[in-house]
Length: 266
Image (cartoon, rainbow, N blue to C red):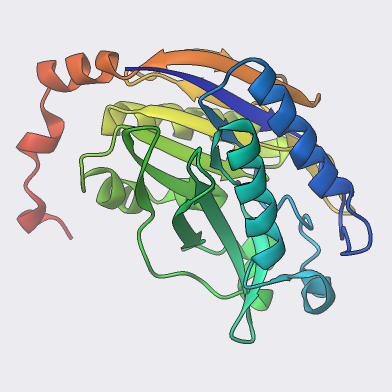
């Protein structure tokens, strides 16, 4: 099955308030651009509503993700796009989370996921709470899973999700800094190879007060080969068509998921 994938590699305004809709306008702009090229799936980066304004979450976090969900659902339905909605800062039951929402082309929510592994170097654990559930879903007729940024450093977690179906596409959304951008690409290629899956990874560009972000959004095939790659500094809509039948061929040759022995793994 062929899918046209679009990744919105965008800059994000830090501390974007409810009165300043710059980030929301950027998200809407790239949905329109994705629709113009007839994309099937559109992917946004991590924390697009606020950036890493963790000390300001009391004023900035989206209560239960209501505003973000309304926007993503509206865009999905308007442009008939399946949307992996990056992630946003949310407040749920008096706690803050880094939350992903996924919507199908009819505007229906198909998944909600709170980031499982919080990144100490950026003080996520100090200000946010961790999730505790898997993130698997059907999108555009394809069994899929998705992870947020630091999650990719835990291959056992990604294998847990990918082996459920097994899933056919792994989506990754991030705010990954430029000084570790080589490791970003290497790990994503490794995750593609070990899970025999397409990896679709959206990273942001630009900077905030403490970080410069490295872009290099990627689409990688099940053999770890880069299908399409964005630059490290510029906003762009990265577009590529993948064929999930290629994945079935790879898995048929080396049946990794059939040969696993999880009863022995710790």
